[in-house]
View: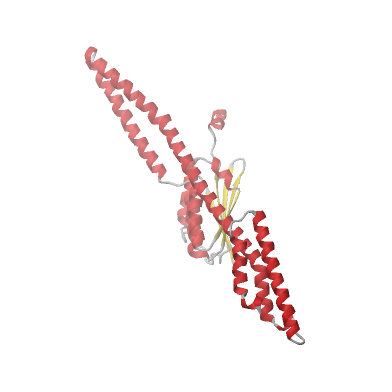
Length: 304
């Protein structure tokens, strides 16, 4: 039988037609040609079998019916696989763009900090140095005062640079989520976030502390929860910021205050006057962290 003997070839052609990056019009032309040729071959083969085989029924050949189903369904399956691969690639590219966006924002923030602080300070050092050079000739007794100012400014700048470098080693919430999402994917855990964008406006120092708590919580999920899903829900009210970290794992059967890094997370939250609550059951564990919303400069000015 022609169709049965060349079924592998038909299926191969079907996957090629369904998976190659043709335009929509060209793809439908190939699909029409494929289905037309294959259907004509099937009709011709079945007609011949009916002519030479008495009482032939197609239902008697279940193996042939399965092959026919594969041949007819392969183009659709190939198109579905291609679309899924394209979506995965698009998601990966979006994640890479987000990482680049975060890095660019961080570079811009550092540049602004350097301009606003070090730039002004170095300008003052230059002025003080030039003044000391002039005073050296007309009033040597005043040079020491100017040099002391230069020395103090240099020390302040050194401390500022150290602070900036130390700040760079700490991750904000978005960076923590990107890094931890890779670890979750390696552990076959799907991460979903709700209202994540509102955390972008939170102060960086607050994000660093909350990011460290999120990182520890996700590490515990990977190590102990045996979950396949994890949810981060961000909330913001008038005077309160909240983050809920939930998994669908086995739960904490005997929760202890100092177990699984909870004690360390509580201490971190205390540094920002925040709290951490733990709720666990056989359906999973939920950590709820909350802290007061920092006041903006305008709010502080109004209160003063």
